[in-house]
Structure formats: C-alpha cells, structure tokens
Image (cartoon, rainbow, N blue to C red; front, side):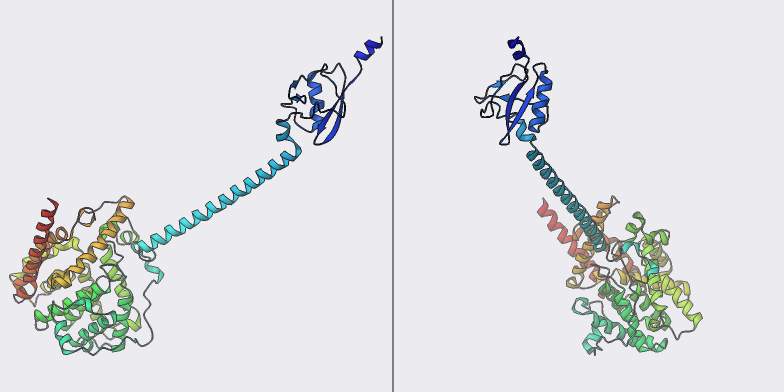
Length: 476
C-alpha cells in the first residue's frame, strides 16, 4: 500500500531559470505534452522545441518517468539551452529592438530614396530646361510675355565713333564679324540705319531706334549658331550687298528699310532646333503654325510683337497704310528664309532674271527674297578665317539637335549626325549645289559680285574638297 501510494505521489523537479530556482510539480498521470507545457510556463519560453539536459549534457526524456532533483542540483539547469536563449523575454525584447531599428533604417532608406527620386526629377527638369534653352525653347508660349521686355530708360550702350576704316569695311563681305562686342555691333547697326537714310525716311526717333535694337539683341538666344552675332552677320552682308550692287539707285528707300529690318529680325528667338525637329516632335510652334514654316512664322510674330511696343516702334511715324505694306513685305522676306522653299524661290527668280524689270513689283519682291536668302547663308563668301568658325558653330547646333532626336526616337538627318558628318562633307555639297548656283544667278543681274562674292565661294568649295581628299587618304 505504501509502495503503491508512493508510486502515484506527485513528482517534483527544480529548474534554474535565469539564476532563480523554479519548482515544477506534476502528477505521474500527466502526459509528456502536459509536462512540456508546465516546463515552458515555468521558464517563460514557447512550447515549440523544448529540451531538457542533465549536467553532463545528456538529453532527458520529458515524461512522468523522468528523474527528480533537488533545488541544489544542476540537473535541469539548461532547459532548452539553445531555444530558450533565443526566446527568452530578454531576447524577445532584443529582437523587438533590432526589428524596430531595422524598420527605422528601412524607413530612412525609403525617405532617402524619395529624396533621391525628387532630386533626379529636378535634375531632369533642369537638364531639359538647359537643353531647350529656357522654358523648352521648342515649345515657346507666345502669350507668356517672355523676353520681350525692352528697356524704357534711354538706352545706355556706348555710342561708338566708327573710324573711317570701319565704315568702309562695313560695306564689304570681307568684314570680320568676330572682333566685335554686342554693344559695338549695336552701334554698327545703328550707323547703317542712319547711313542708308532710313532714320530720316521713316522719321525715326533715334532713341526709339536704340531701344528697338536693344530689344532685338535681347530676343536672340545664346545658341551656338542662331544668335545675335548671326543676326549681325546677315544684316552687315545685306548692307554690303546694297552698296556693292548699287541698290540705292534701283530700289526705293522703303525697300532698303524692308531689306535691313527683315535681315535684323529674320531669326528672332530661334530655339536652336530647326523646322524638321519642330514638326517631327509636334512642338507648340509646329502645332500653332500647322507645320508651315513654324520657325519663320515665329520670328515674324516676335518681330512685330516688339514693334507693337510704342517705345520700340521705329515705324511709329509711318502712315498706317504704308506700315501695313511694310509689315507684309517684311513677313514675306522672313518667310523666304525657310530653306524648304529654296528651290521654289530660286526657280521663280531664274525665270525673271534674264528680263528683269525694276519697275515690276513682282520682280522686285522676288529679288528681295533672293537677296535675304543670299545674306542668310553667306558665311562662305567671307574669308576662310571668318567663315570656318561658323561651320563649327553650325555643326555644334546640328549635333545638339541630332542627339536630342536620337534620345526622343525621332528621325535624324545624316548631315546633322555627329557619327556621319565632317566639316568637308557638310560644306562641299551645300556650296556646290546651293550657294554657287544661287549667287551665280544673282551675278547675272549684278556682275560686280563675281570677284568679291562668287569667286570666294568657288575657292571655299576647292578648300573643302582638298580637306576631304586628305581625310579620305588618312582613312584609307
């Protein structure tokens, strides 16, 4: 009886839990699962993978037959020695802290990524702005009042007294346009208007002329090629052709004013990307002008936007009906600078040149269109040291456009592709098939231009053909 009651007496074991003795009592009838649950509850660990080891490291079976111990023994000191370490309350708190820190770190990284994304967006916007030359140069918003902000005070650019040498040089295509600052070019243009008698003819206020020229300069962008210096080149060449061809004796002063003013305004606010890009990229200019000479139409619009300002209207004292005709004539000339119309305009002039009639308004209009075209693309008429830097400027602008076209998946013209074009290949065809035929046609009407304008074109053609032969030989 005694032994029987002894065999059914509760069993007691002692656990060492973080340095504290924990007493566990269980019945002999408890299942191993019940005992495991008691042990887990006593040691504050999950009941997933509990193990009991004796002081020698041997595993002890967790069941009603497991041996007992005393509070002084170490038999069950390491309860779940590996799992308990990971799942103790202290470890759980440590894991919580680690998870919290990791979440904080991830949140910080996310914040940094957001900042980086925003920075990338800003950098991309800045890059686009730089590529498109202020407010997306190819998508000009005509109504935002951009750039047309003439100075209302009396213009203060220095009044240069041009030497007699400079005055004479201005009349010739050999004039070196690279040696002049903007203020000096403004003074030269001002002189041309006075010298041709245009200030007197149109009763211009000299201060208004200064303001107008300043507004013109401020509305040319800093493109590699289509900039204010190009405007001055074209205007100076026009002034030179007027003198060389004795146009004062054949055309009216109004015609002189139309020719000079169209030359000054012909590329106003040029964005640096040509009509083909505007049309292919469906820019605002192309949409506005229905793909019909979008740039040239824009140059005209900006020109007359400036002239609409009272302080810049050099034609303010002209009769309204006369101004209407002047306006239409200037528009006609600026639109004629679209090279897409080159063949049409030159063919029309060829039909008239053999029987040209200076009293025929249609003939004179056609001549003026050809004259501004000649001046617009006349760089190769100039000495090589003056002309060649313009080729570099033009190619830089071409490459800027073709790079953009490639990035936007638009068609790229071979003559603008930096991987395909060279200076000789860029110039030879243009000189042979565009410049020389046009200037030789004008030469029929004005033979005096052969020596000073046509022959330099032939020399330039020969120069670039020699360069191409050298390039070809080096390639081989």
